[in-house]
Image (cartoon, rainbow, N blue to C red):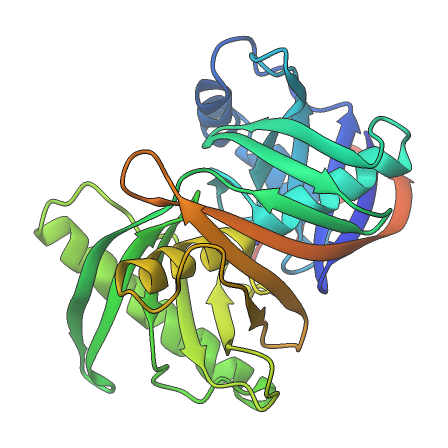
Length: 310
Ligand code: PYC
């Protein structure tokens, strides 16, 4: 299996060029569903230690159904198949340019969540125009024994987010353990409430928003991913969901730009335009860098061939 590894604002992406599973034909969401149900061991083995690393997202290249797209892609982490991935799309565009498959300019990419547009402005800088994003519920409260009442918004940006602003734990790198543990408890509680309310929505990511010490940055975030790692980048789909909340609250005008910082200090430039179905079309600009071109080997005699599963 040939892969190219990149990182976007510190968050790794592993693009799988060949040797991936045959997912058959049909829509990308059907093929993503097949990856999730029939090939869990394989995608975990690609992502998990010792072959992968925490926080890594995989990008499996597949044939697009729409011929105007340069490729189709299905994203996943060690815990779940994702509808879309913003940092992964920036990493993918830089990888396709590295391979000579795309030039500077605008290109379309098909994902299970829909078609997104990428504009490559130099060999590292990419702007993603994401799928239409929206807030579906404002001020949804849950009560936890140790934290009391927590209130946040539920929003979609290609994945489902519960966004809490301000964060119950200071969004500081020194608090990573506490942020992670708190976000995991909150994800469990919000999904219990989602089930009880029969919303049909399962939250897969939790975002805490906090202030940044840098004057030109609107806020800093901490994002918990499905595999319980935190996003090193400001999270493209999470930033899309956040933009949808800011737009719905009238706190950001169409075309107005803000900078979103991640917990490790990397940042994205964000803005939006109104969408056609009442949501917004987010625009996310970030940088990715190629780190490795590798051949993955799955030796049948390797006791950790499928990853370290504790
Ligand atoms: O950038 O959308 C994103 C993302 C999702 C999970 C990790 N990164």
